[in-house]
Length: 451
Image (cartoon, rainbow, N blue to C red; front, side, top):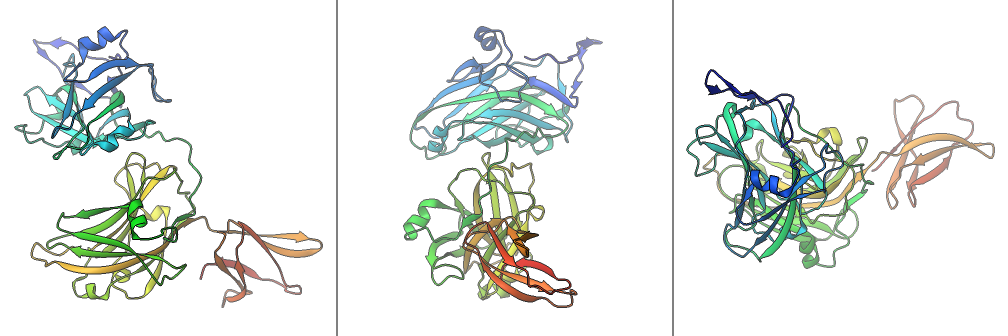
């Protein structure tokens, strides 16, 4: 293991070491595989040292785990680490951090989860978990210490001030089991930190059009790209294409049978796509048509969500009030990046998925089931156009940059801000456009808007 300042025996008993701002638990910097095997033992996997490490890692080794997962219910690999030289005290507000490189084969898993188990000196244990990445690039996971969960077979949550051992539980099958598969993952740099470890690659290019639902030939094609996610299990969602649409020919129709009880929701989640960024000055816009039949039961939990996810499954979310969810009219809604929220750090420079969700109500345990139909269209992520002035052949022209081809804009003008009028309509055919400023104007102010 990497070196850190463990203390020894004082007055005949082990003294717990308090985790500092960054304490390395395990960096897998062993001299040989034999040294690794003396410290770490698998249940059925093949372990080994690897020179595959994250670009920002200070070490030269990582742990390679090769495991075949047969089609058995709850097929799980347990990798047991060494007993620590002295108990480790972890503050509830600190973070357990690790690096992991995944395997696309985990898409075959019916339950794909990696748990970091932590044991105290009394034999109690808890765990932090995350889906096993299906991408091979190195990712970082941060678990706040006080989010530790008690498994069913532990008598109590462990005492974070007296941690003595860590293990990995790698789930490859649930119940029922899926197809058998062979997978390889890499694990490195298990640490305790005062703050999350945030390391993201360079941002990808933006994706101006998220989805306008025009590319799907039929409902089957739509459902080939989107999958259902509902809560609770009794909630049932049906997604289909609908016409007419507020822009183009097709919109998304969500018919949701909300289950009884509190906080029922139905949603569809996209298939992963090429990474795209959410620039800090970008705006997400979408069109939503609600269901007036929901008005009688609407409350603070009646809301529409749009969420974006990075490759590690971490999401940012924007939610609306009830008004557009219960309106029979199409409503255009917009949200800046700072209006999205998340419980963790998200790589907004490399998003790969989105989810469209409607929550029925907050309600009570006695709330009855109800159905609703909702429509969504023209989801975009655009950077507001930038206006400028330039002289061209002795004439003053207004330049417009950052336009979205195929979009209509209204150029508004005013001389004193008391009232705005439309100077012209710009039907963008490229990302830039120009417009001749009328001569003889002593002053004028301009802005570009999407109607």
